[in-house]
Length: 171
Image (tube, rainbow, N blue to C red; front, top):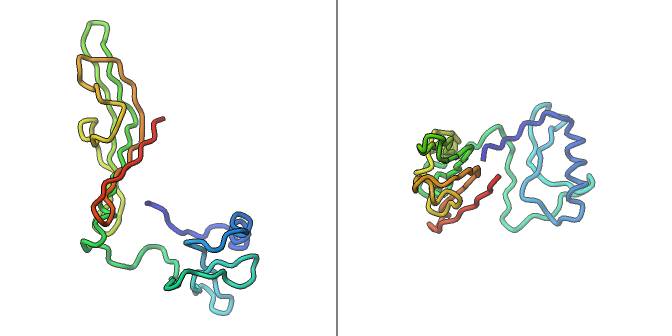
């Protein structure tokens, strides 16, 4: 979701942070690749090392992959529709109130984050009307002008089986 691997600080320090944070863990789902001193700039397979000793055991069928700047696989097929189903609604500002002259004033700033065919993330303008039914906090928006002030981030998706899921954080 917009994350990338860019080794900008000392790799020794990063490895030490992982060792400290996960010293009691049996394995991690991701780890950092190391540069091979004999082949400058070449990447070795990414494995998690515990306290600089042997790699920790991985689940059966775990394939080692090289960490690169971006994914080099094609995710345009229908089996990856679950990625494209993820929507992020950023309700930065939604305010409704009755003004001094008894008019209803409504102001909204809603952005919709989506994923493209190859997983590229982008933002577009949206509106309160486009929010899914599962979103809570703006149910009375447009009804006889009750006073409403709302900010939230709402994420919804469909998993690979088509089941609907969502999370909302109000702030």
